[in-house]
Amino acid sequence: MTYQAYRYLWTFLLVSTGALGWPAQTRAESLRDSLRAAYESNPELDAERARLRAIDEQVPQARSGYRPTIVGEATVQRTNTESDPQALGDGSLTSTQFQLNLSQPIFRGFRTTNAVNRAEALVRSGRENLRRIESTILLNAATAYMDIIRDKAILRLRERNVSVLSQELEAAKARSAVREVTLTDVSQARSRRARAVSEADVAKANLRISRANFRQVVGHAPAALGAPPLRVANLPRSLNDALSIADRESPEIVSALYQEQAQRFAVDEVWGELLPSVNLEASYNHETNPSRFLDKTDTASITGRLTVPLYRGGSVHSRVRQAKHTHVGTLQDIEKVRTETEARVTAAWSRLVAARAQLSSARIEVEAARTALEGVREEEKVGQRTLLDVLNAEQEYLDAQVSRVITRRDLIVASYALLATIGRLTAEWIDEIKIVYDPEEHYEETRNSWIGVTITHPYVEPESDYEIADHPALIEAPSNGFDSLPSVFGLFKQTYK
Image 1 (cartoon, one colour):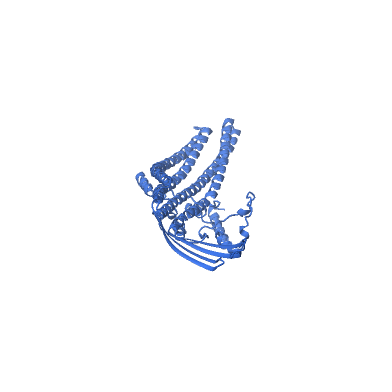
Image 2: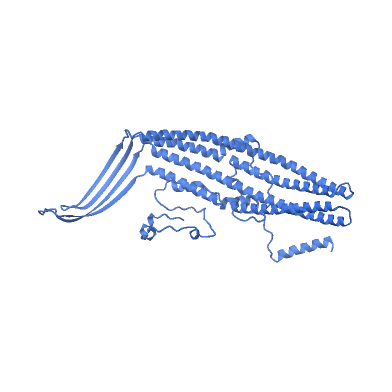
């Protein structure tokens, strides 16, 4: 059958399978697809989002200083009095009392204002920490993706090398039979093939490890992965640009700035304990049968209370000094984080520049090694080279190809590492992510909350292949009887959705 006939046959088979409805080949998973999957399903990222929502709750806790405190109290008392000789008040008496107390802070030495400002600064610092974790997860996903691309390419090269060396070994055996080569040449070919088989086995193991790492970070097993382009968008053009961007957008630096701001408000918050405070207090008291001569009494009062701290043993002054020292420490932390970030950016930029230069050299090396291998093979045919020369040339060509594959991987990973270091490897940068987690949503939901113990968050739906409560290592805690209380007490139970 001619080559043209083969082409017609294959075309007919492809059309036929399509007409019969056989599934077509699925689209290869791109690098950005993997980044999107890691962003949406990585448990470490979901855990950090939950921690940030917990930090959000510090704001309503601080704002509670603006709000009143209302306490109700009810008592039932039964007394029995006997005296000798008998008195007028002898006998049994049952009295009930209901009391309602309200306390409204008017002025607390600016402690509430500073507490709210401190809590909001901590929330913004937590958001930056979430952004840092997000960049780390996306970088890990990109690294795991490129590790699989690298290991698959290396495995193909290793297996092809085994096939080539197997052919060389069979050819050497045949030539040895007719005394064209010696047994030494056959042994050398056998040795190189054994080495190639060993390297292929190592490549298979490395690919399995990379697949496991990919599943851990991205959340699903890798399927068909497509090699991404070498050029990565949004990279700075120079080291100075990278340092400038990092100084403005690095999550570590911005988080340290908010930590310093929070500690500054903490100093003022403690200082407020030395200032006067003003409270408005109101109470209402209703009592039935307070004595044998009264059926009921009703008492209502409104009190304005001014409290001036004169001396409290020096503890507050010590805490003010302590807060100031802590604030000085956060100022030094800013400088420390800035120098560390500058060093990381410089290192990431240097690795990127080195990878670009290495890739250019690797391309030249591969082309030169391929040309040299072809020349050595031709020279070996006319007796100017030995079989060992051919084996060495094949090994050099293989090493050059493997080096180029590794360098391509290092170049892309270095690009993403630089983006992560300067603070630009975020969800907004990935076009395929349609739902980006918005921390402002939960913050606005809870900031002015006055009451309620239910937490709701529609974005994160925990999924598991097994029930956590059924895990054999989990020891069930003894019941405290709380769940057996009447349903009316369910108001005091925390509910999770």
